[in-house]
Image 1 (cartoon, rainbow, N blue to C red):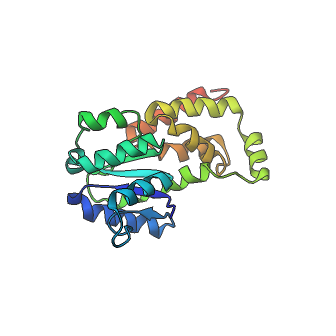
Image 2: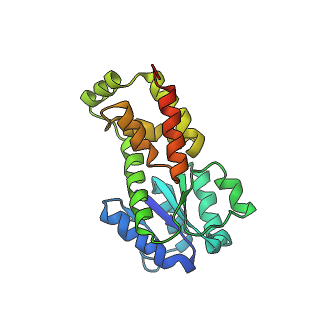
Image 3: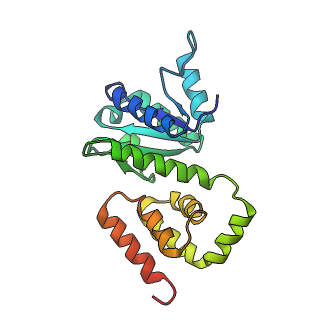
Length: 215
């Protein structure tokens, strides 16, 4: 069964992973997580590989434990092979091992420390909703409104600035945010919430305003 999100985690982070699933599913985002979603007597490896193939994105609960986990590495390798987007949700201040860095070096990271984790869960939910909304066709009247409100060159400039912080995901986030923003300032403010630190949010906002026509 297809799910929105595949959750990859190591056993020491089980409590965090299941907290995250409860939070996401409470927001209507369907998750696949082992062992909950593996059928009795099923082939674990086959079920996991099929679930990765059917998901829209992978959330990697990243910690010292998952950093050294061969199972997590295999799941990440499979996701990359299937061209599935991966979002490392970093719950500890550790850097990826060489074996994972090869696959994750171009990914946008979301830091989930220091505690409490609830604000980080909320930010992840908002991020995924925006990401998934970008993949859905918008009503034609709203597409027309976006075209009237925003110059295509403006959107491309904003996308380039955002990509400097989070990489290729910027394209999808700009597209989704534009469908719900009523002005350039509102669009920039929405996108700034995707960044991890106040410094990054300030710098991104400044860059976008300086690039705006007449600025």
